Structures are given as structure tokens and as C-alpha cells.
Amino acid sequence: MSSSLSTIGDILNTVRQYSVYLNYLAIIGGIFGHISNLLVFTQLKRFRNNRCTLYIIIESIIALIFLFISTTSVLLRIAYGYDLSDNNLIWCRMRFIFYQGLSLILFFTICCAACDQFCSTSYHFSIKNLCTLKLVQYLMSISSCLWFIHSFVFSLFLNIQPLFGCIITNPILTTYSTYFFYPFLYGPVQIAVAFLFSLLAFRNVLRLDQQMTAMILTRVLFFIILSLPYTIYRIYSINNPPPKSNQLQYTIGLFLQTNLNYLFSLNYQCSFYIFFAISSQYRRQIKYVLVKRCWQRWKNWYCIHQNQVIPLNVVSTISNNEPD
Image (cartoon, rainbow, N blue to C red):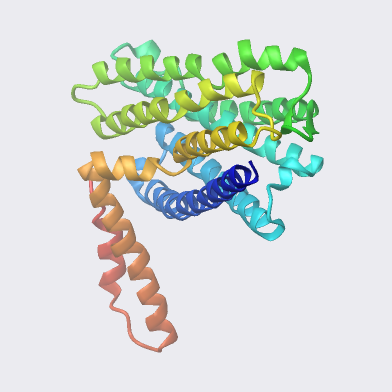
């Protein structure tokens, strides 16, 4: 019996280490990808005053914040040797506020990007001009505040249980999470809306902004694949949390949760790689920004500090030869 418990304990430690390594992979890949996204979508003139570009920029900023918090969480786990959220109520609630708030903003941003792309590719003038850049800015600012307020209120009902860790203990909130929050705000309904408007936008785009529409549609498809399994699992786990007293059941639950969490966290790192894979235009734009702009500026800065002469025509050539 003791040998069996020891084996389960070893497996549990392996799963926890596996979780840490997955977090490292997500953090490294995500940071590089989103910084590259921000460089492309903020540096090139063709993306300025484009509403869908604003959504991608917001997604990248939100993802970088999420990855920073994930890094902090991993470092704390390494420092203390256990998940601090299972023992410290303040960290349990703070992490929940940021994770849920940022996830809700991400979900809403992707959904709005799909709807906006449908409007911008519509042949009907009234629909085409339904959304403006100013409206998008107001919408994202107000909705972000509301999502964080929602997450803060939600976190007040979290408590630490010795057998289960950091969980919802209020039965009314459990019912709300099961039948409204996860289905409507965090899962199937938003996913369905994003998918529907992406298909409608793709139907509209025959000779319009094909690059942006293809990028948004593919992003939505990956959003569905990466988010739906996690949402289903969360609905189940809220109502049936695995007890720590049953080590085998808890280890299986932790392993499943680790993999689904990682799958969901790919939402915070995959957009750059999706855009890079499906769009030859985006690959040219990335090459131009990283090589012609970032590298050239660094080289010019280095030359200035080395008291070398920089040809004047270099700067004008860089600024006037943006890729399509």
C-alpha cells in the first residue's frame, strides 16, 4: 500500500514538473510572437487606422500581461515548492482576477474582431460604416473595466479548502458559473458568434482586404479548437473538484487540467505563428520590420556611437519601401 502511494506521489511530482516546463515553453514562444505582432502592426502605415489591427494589438498586449503573470506564478511555485494559490487566499484571489479578467477580454476581443471584419467587408454601406475606430476604442475600454469588475466580484466567493485547494464555495455562484458564465461569457456562445461572423466575412471578401480577413478567420478557428475543451472541463471541475485525499484521482485530474490549461494558454501565444503560417504578405512584413527597420535602426545607432558616417539615403530607402 505504501509503495503504491509512493508511486502516485512520484507521478504527482512529475506532473507538476511537466506543468512548469509547459509554462516555460508558452512564455518563451508567446513573448517573442506578440512582440513581433506589435512591431508589425504598429510600424507599418498600411495597418494604421485599421480597426481589426487595433483588436490584434489589444490581444497582443493582453497576452503579454497574461504571460508576465504566468511567469510570476511559475517562479513562486519554484520558490515555495508548491502552488501558492492552494495555500494563500490573497494570491488565490489576485491570480483569479487577472486570469479571468484577461481571458474575458481576450474572448471578447476575438469575438469583436470577427464581427468588425464582417462589417468592414460588407457591401452594404450602412453596415460597412456601422463601426468606427472611436467606437472600438470606447467599446474595448469600457468592456475591459466591466470584465475586471466582474472578476473581482467573482473572486470574493473563492476560498481555500484543505481537500480541494482554491475553489468556488458558494452554491449560487457554482450554478451561475455552470449555466451562464462558462456557456455564455467564457465559451460556446462567444465561440459560435465569432465563428458565424468570420464565415460571413469570408463570404464577403472577394476583392477586399483578403489578408486581414483570412488572418481573423483562421485565428477564430484556432480559438474554437483551443478554448472549447477547457471550457467543458471547467464546467465539470467546478461541480466535481477532485479531492486531494484521493491521490490517484487528484493526480489524474491534475494531469488533465495541466494539458487543457496549456491548450487554452496557446490562445495567448499562437496568433503570431498563425499569421506567419497562413499569410505570405505577413511573412514579408515581418522580414521587413525585423531586418529593414529594427536591425537597421540598431545598426545606425551603433554606427553613431562608433562615430561612423551613415549614408542619408539609407533612412529614406527604409521608410519608402514598405511591403504590401
